[in-house]
Image 1: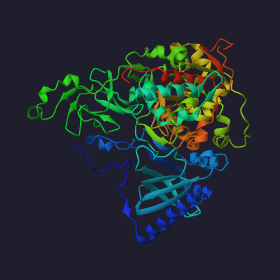
Image 2: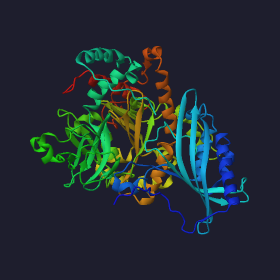
Image 3: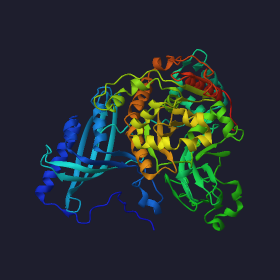
Image 4: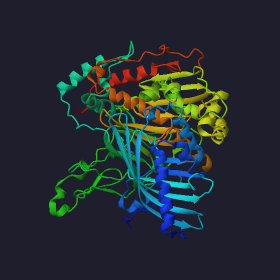
Length: 189
Length: 443
């Protein structure tokens, strides 16, 4: 049987309950603050928003035959564009901060537009399940520009000791491209 | 998306003018490169005919298509091909183009099927690319067409080299082994692994706005760039409290023949440290544990005394054995390439080792890889500068290294130079030039 409906590459916790207006507002503001930290290249601030047990991933994506559309996304043990722990993210940031990371010299000027924010809470996952869409514009040097669109599926926890009051424990990034139309994924999503 | 100019059809007159140009652009004696070879759309077209239309090309790893009906939509140069596992276990490779009006037979990147049916008029081809059915045959008089004459265009030869599937359009191509020339020992050592190899499932693809030869040449012959291009990642990966020092000149030898090239270094304590830094302690220990079994297949020198660092099999298969990335530099017009990259692992490695390899390879050499990014940046910058007429007429210096032809220690077979040399680059371009000067069948 064919399935035109997209099969998502993650499990939504079965007990996820839509959050109230205030929680949704607070989480939305958190995502905007996060996007702002990235766009302003305040990467240490950004790292402080990521949990110590972070799992940050972006599965590869494929064009499939109609009856195999459920396999549009790379499975758990297959190729991914990102599959990072916090330690790896720290390394990526450290690399940028050496001032010798040529692919970011001059730095990309990114603009993260985060929309379609939907917040639910899951007791079993001990986290808010936050879905959002992104459009990321990347301008670099003089005439380089790239566009990235996609959606994100996050697990975000309250953490009173984190500067923004929340921390991202898990992020699945789903790009709308199969062939990544970029020389590198050297920016954050 | 990179600019992809309309294809050009070459005529005999244009080809001979291009031959003269090619001969003048590559001077392997002094070591100069006329950079029009990276930017000229006519040369690109001739290259499609005479390099990609003739050479053995990597099209897939067999682990991508384990069972009958499994297929991988690949490329040979700019031509789309299907690589398909047959019912008898063999592999077929044929042009992904319907013989009726030329539509793509299969638009999926990979998968499993019983047959390929064109979506335009429904002509159907079996797993081997043979035309088996003309739709509405009775009504349209399809029976007047001899189906055996109108199968998808098959490659001339296929070769399975320890799981890597190669194909060529050239019936007169030398055998795959012969095509490796004096570099065969090195490829055997890299790919003849105990239990065989596989690639982590799927594929990563990204587009770099630079000519494919920049990737190929660098993997063939350029460890020289490492300390400069990749200094940021090297700094970031230094353990806490350790000062970064520029590494001493690399020991070992750079091998080259028939356009292929790469570097092999002595396996010393430092090699294991490098593996540990790049791939993690567990992978380093795993690699050590396989050396006895590997030595039984390829000998002590290859398995226990040698660390393979980087290599390019002419024209467009790159590998970094230490970082376990395997890739194809797919040409896409003169100004762009697609990189198709995989993590290469031992088929028998424990699952946690495969996972560790996948994560580390993706982190270092892949679409988001911290080392990969700086390479793509340099190649893209070169391509950008080549928009200029003066820039395209300015010769590149390809003179590093001594053109030694023998390893004085006798450990590394074939023609070799010092590790930090451009001898393999000169070999790459001189082989490229020789192929560009020889017509192929059917031009």
